[in-house]
Picture (cartoon, rainbow, N blue to C red):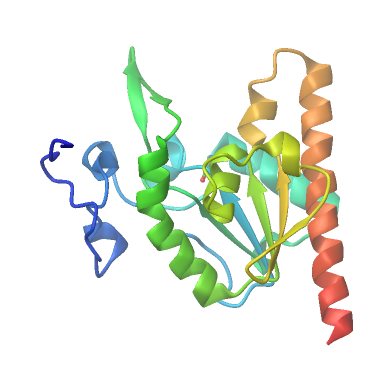
Length: 207
Ligand code: URA
């Protein structure tokens, strides 16, 4: 039988994100970081989890990955104010390295626990197109722990009434060992955002 972790209630139905104890990540985070953007945005962008800056400021994508996302949005002709931006996991998972807090990839059980919130946001916002940045976001959005970027990138897939466009996470570009890879990954992100924008426009025209 799985041992019960103190302060964790996997079946909890919390009233607010701040009270969430569905996994243990709340313990080491400064605060939960909800999504941000217009209530009925036609495009939703889903990242992995808040980073160091997001954890401190309480807003998604305000650190270095956010700066790259902002640049890519501008290049793709998408206004950030028109997009709902959120994460698959709402608390920062990290480990200490010297004085720094280093990002740690969330475990599947943490992605599953936090889907409770992502599904509420998706239901409230009702986006036509969801852009999944990276494998964690894609797994959560598709509710499939085996989903891979390789299998999904380059073509939108229909899922529960949303068009899902998958691409790399900006942090992958930021961590790239050489400028060529960085540029190639960044370009793929811009292309995915352009495609998402095209799908949103097509949906508007069809109405
Ligand atoms: N990376 C993410 O996935 N989300 C953020 O909000 C910031 C960095």
